[in-house]
Image (tube, rainbow, N blue to C red; front, side, top):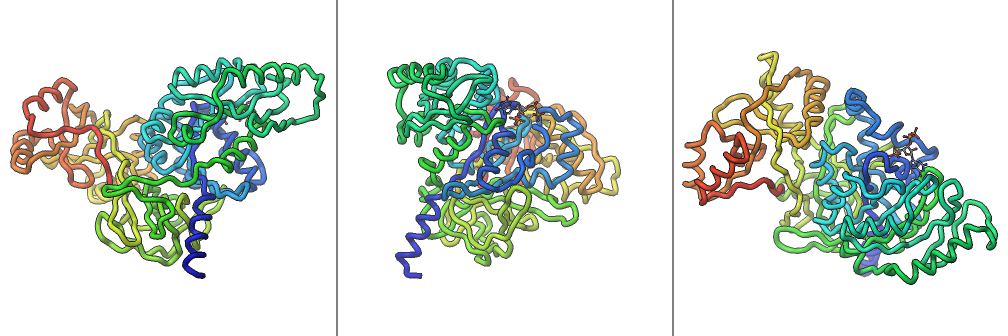
Length: 512
Ligand code: G4P
């Protein structure tokens, strides 16, 4: 292929990628919508294949069982399907808020998010939190107001609520025809097309109501503006019913029409454009032992620029190591497949034996590091208690592996006492214990610690050393060997910081 054609192809392939996540409060309909999207893309034959039940309805022990059945979490990590000439990569975010760190990292790998809202409930707690994360990264948001086939709140009121509680402009893209049991379809405000589930005449009361409402909509509400959407200031709003498959194609057509396609990404030195010829990729998730029969470990990498070809070698920028891509993989609803080639926007799974870490940049040539993948200081700190002392060595490596995967954060105390794990939500501790037992055969318990806060400490070398020596019993190292100070209370933390003004205490650490 001539160089000009290669460049044109690269550009076209990247322009048709749509990489997104769905954010919602539990029960708003994320699972149902996911199934409908996959079905529209032909990725699954039957609705109901994604998950049997939403995570909310699982009890704790159910959830653990499912987590052990690794087959299920893998299929939901990333789902690729094709629709309208575009390649969609739908990244799943864990439903439970105890896994918010994982969610945050996943959201670093998307170009847009679909915010699903229950039409009877409006903006709920978890929707707002997830929205805030998207806002931090200026991720464009498309809104889907779901369950319009039920008793719902007034659409104008819902639009108002989104605008006022999220400080986000709203521009309706479609308008519902009929409500609740009479919900019959949608009217596209831009193309003026009707999409109805059955034919209804012009004299139908629903059509008359639509005419009146459209006058109001056009008079009172802003029109869609692409630049504001791309900047994350305005959300187009779609109405529908995932369950009855109304509005789902409106949503997909919109994502095809205005994307966004893979965005430019910040690194430590410069902004990397998606259609640059050289490949760069960011590891945002690691999943080990997905297949219980093979002890495999998959690093999920979002391609940020260029084109991936199976067999190529990439540099792991953190270590300078060359990583050969023998078997990069794509994930579909139920299977995986070797990825012969992939483009910016795609997510590939790279099997490895613990070389790759969350936050790693892979690069074909230049040494750049993507920024913005954080660790948050955990608020729950527990000491790991090992019941069988013979397994100390095994525990050590297992804990390292699971911490690299991001299941928990691991702190090794400077005084040599047993390791401390830090989590944002207690469910992470349950997962850690279950996986140590199930996958590594190591039974553990947790003991309380006197600590309630962890902070990464940095500063000039001699000052840091003096502090570490003086505070030895409260010092630990994280997975990367970076010093961490453990404090018993917020008050202690403030005092320590005041008494050591030359040092910096951080509650967020950038990885990579
Ligand atoms: P989630 O992943 O966001 O937690 O939500 P999920 O899709 O599991 O949907 C939660 C409940 O809402 C389910 O009902 C689902 O069938 C229902 N639902 C989803 N979309 C719509 C819709 O457009 N209209 C109506 N009326 N209901 C919708 P469930 O009874 O809790 O579970 P199930 O027995 O149906 O699985």
